[in-house]
Amino acid sequence: MIYAKNKKARFEYEILETMEAGLVLTGPEVKAIRAGQVKLTSGFVTFHGEIPLLTNAHISKYKYATIIDYETERSRKLLLKKKEINYLKGKSQEHGLTIIPLSIYTKGRHIKLEIGIARGKKLYDKRRTIKKREVDRQIRRALKEQGG
Image: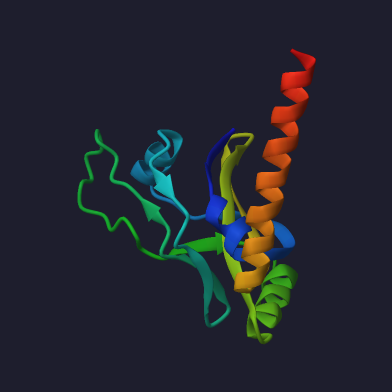
């Protein structure tokens, strides 16, 4: 089940590659995510030494938690294999590339994060995306009107 998607990421960035990572979370954070109280729009992945961290992702405080005092935008450790960490670290140091969260979901009983290696789009690329979306919408309308 998908709890949150970063819709803005696909518009703002060209996604070159995606990966799956686990997250180190506290109990109330897991409950808040399962309640859908998570925002990934301003999040990104940074490295603190050899440790990948999800930074700036907002997980709201869980309403019924006994531990009330936790930071909503703290950096959370990502669980990846050593080979994946080294690969991502190399990609993050390349010019123009960044690592962003795309969605947060469950796989079995574990909460997973889909991360993407992305390159920022230029303004004209964004305009092209908007134009294509509008044309697709007009085609769908025309087909619906003809069919019904």
